Length: 271
Length: 273
Image 1: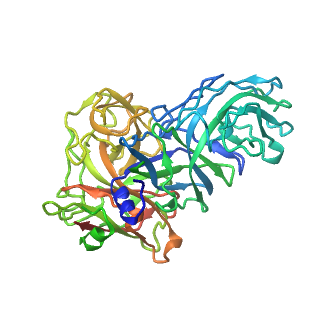
Image 2 (image 1 turned 90 degrees about the vertical axis):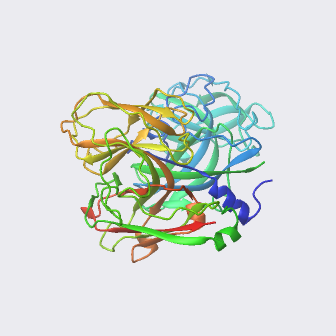
Image 3 (image 1 turned 120 degrees about the vertical axis):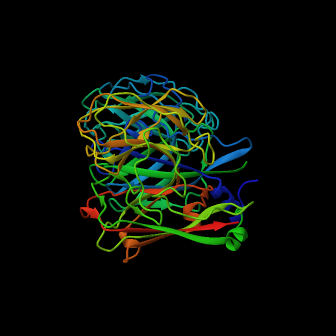
């Protein structure tokens, strides 16, 4: 049965696996703009730009993913601890990268077909999943456009509209920038994406893509160079699905990301 | 087994400790430093391992000494106290690990293939969860060169290739560099070879180390004015300490506060049950 006592937690901690890594100093981003570590070198190694069009469903063996071991049969993997230190204050997000694509133009105002590959973790529904944009080659710095993605929600209702408006966020032109799409009212996830369209050019074509992700844990590093951690209570024993493509994103308070070290412990309990 | 609160409470405790020699670790920003060669323990400080590699234990000079668990018992880390003088570096990361295998004495000027035949021998010998580091014992050169490492992963697949990630251009004594494993690999069982693409410019002495991380934690100044940082069992996660484990540690200092770490004292509370 799932963990339900301090004894269970102790047993889980005692059997937990430790993961440790780092990311090298990364390209400057605007303060407050989410920054993907997907293509930043370190441990894990830098990932590749995802496939264009329908994209791909990465997993724990994809270059760029934090390598981890699936839970034993009948067990669930749980995040027992997360600690990090960064050269600059930031918010750290550990997430499961469910699907991603690239090859979208930052200058085209035509509808750009996506028709995303089906999600797999833990199913194809995308309940609780979020939709983000991710920049692979710099696009323009204009904030005078709105990006609208047409998607299907977890209830399998198609033709839903998600939007990103940089005028209410920030310019997101730099490589590695990530930007969140606002789902249509009432929706609690994203099952698939059919297309995306810009209302105006960002100013440069560049190369950007969409990422469907499921957040696992959030950690705030409020002081530069000074670490913080979540223990097993503060991680709320967040579930890590089998084959999860674990990756990191930060939202820095300044214009640089700086060196970054992370540590996690993953335990198991019964389903 | 220490799998319940009662068992942890009633467990037999022992304390193991060490100190880093004053002024022995340079604090270049964001470098990872091994305390192996500067760790003051009863057996003396650690030395560069052999060029062919060896499996150090708790009785190897440089290891934090402790008493193995009695028959039928296990030993777990249940407390940790780190002390740094107020004048020293007061924030950073400590990486406590079991040093499973290490080689040293390799030349930073040689482009010859260095080969090894031994593997890890302690705990889960598949190598699951084990990390690989390049460790510098005597300063090598800074000339750009690639370290190509061939290893066997946790599944027993040989011929895997790893690369070294440079965190700094500095390659001074005691610096370690984490080695990025091939995608999907979750551990290292053995290293078969390492080769430089070109001379680094200085022979010095370097090696490779396979370690099993026990706990990694950030420490910081504001937690206690005296520079003392205490970790409780839940925070530590009750990592198991294998019989004869070669307990050692790295420190990572995010910024240059002073030119050296003045001193560092570490006490581990191990419980047996």
